[in-house]
Length: 226
Image 1 (cartoon, helix red, strand yellow):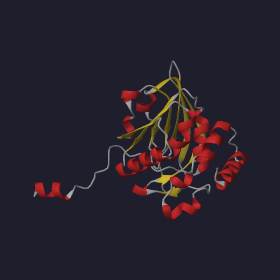
Image 2 (spheres, rainbow, N blue to C red):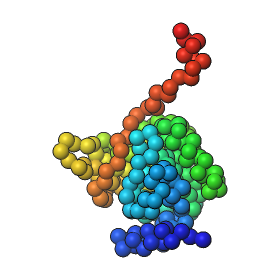
Image 3 (cartoon, rainbow, N blue to C red):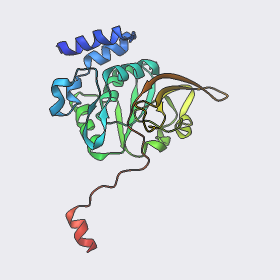
Image 4 (cartoon, rainbow, N blue to C red):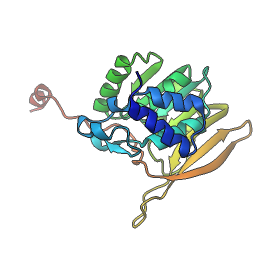
């Protein structure tokens, strides 16, 4: 049985201009309360971003729906996601495409997301601990790429992993002093001769960070180095 809060959320999304019924159905069927921290469970279906572990956030439902709609995902497509986070965006995309490849640089976030995917029996999601700047060249090219952290500039390394005709949705821009929003959600279409770029809406995402965070050493590893 669908959570009444999910139905109310979908009704609000329709009023905000989300018209793709496949996207709306995916949003309704994805239990957002499973992807938020326990302390924020009562706010799970509010249209707002919420903090998660490792200093990251789960995007507000409208932004997830808007990005998913802008991707125009087909059921036979392969999708690359940069920034697994809580796993919510992947879970929304899962019923819309053939397979999702999702990369996360924070091991605790990735492990938690993998547990959620298993609980929801989402068996078309492939995960990787890695550097989002590099993408996933071993699995390229992709029909679609979605990025859930802001690049300072359009990432050429990811454009190279798009199929001709492929679409990437990515927040672009750096946070400037005194400005609350200085990023634009950008649509990239790879053509046979280059790329087309379209600015969509202003957004605020956590910045994209290269590399992997340094993980704390285990006690026995520290002892061996002394």
